[in-house]
Amino acid sequence: MTVAAPRPSARIYHTDVAAFRDARWDDLITERDQAALSPSAQPRRKTEHFAGRALLRVALQDWTGEPALSHSLRADANGRPECIGGPQLSIAHSGGLVVCALAATAPIGIDVELPVERRTIDGIAERYFSAEENRWIGSRPERFYMLWVLKEAHLKALGVGLAGGLSALRCVIEPPRIEATVEDSGDAPELALYEMADGFLGIAMLGRRLDTLTAHRWTPGAPLCAAPLALVAQTRH
Image (cartoon, rainbow, N blue to C red; front, side):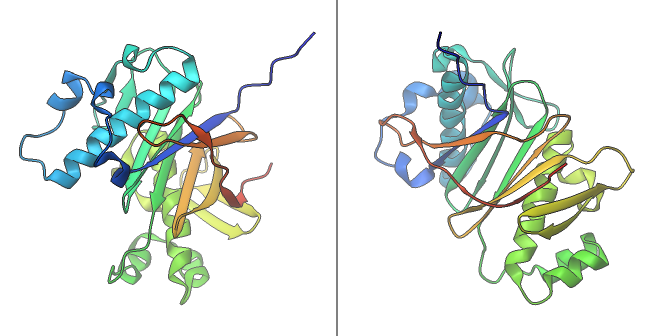
């Protein structure tokens, strides 16, 4: 008897916004998706929005086996997309990349950051990161992004976004391990940090271990393909 492989605790999907310029993907966009975007939105913002909606539907089809357009997406009270009657999800974009994460029932958050020249990160770190985290960053700006994606992913998993405060989670990253504590002494999230393009991707899950995770790349007009990411560090209990 063949035993089915266990469902991963989460799946990551990603795509390149540039791939949407000459490809056919509007069959993955609904009138609700179009209505959710302001008519005055800049062209880049429109492309990112529609690329995100298309990626989410491709991901949902892969996760559930149900047709892409059978999934109804809406924005929650904080403006984040959610699937009505579907799995937990989170989405992020940076530097032309769009990424999303799906999980069966556990709240999940994802963030991706590609370094931007001339971005002032010192002031942000000094204001919102702990003294220990600032010492760890030192003169290595890539470490700022490593912390940032984990903190924002955690806030997304909580459903509060940046308004929840970047100080709500404190991390000590010593690859391949992450030590995490939360401000209110509650249960720390499961965290995983990956390299992605020239930056980093962070995943946070609440109430379940991130023991199995798969990643897939999607290009409009082509099938999903496995695209393993390089793990930097993760929480280990």
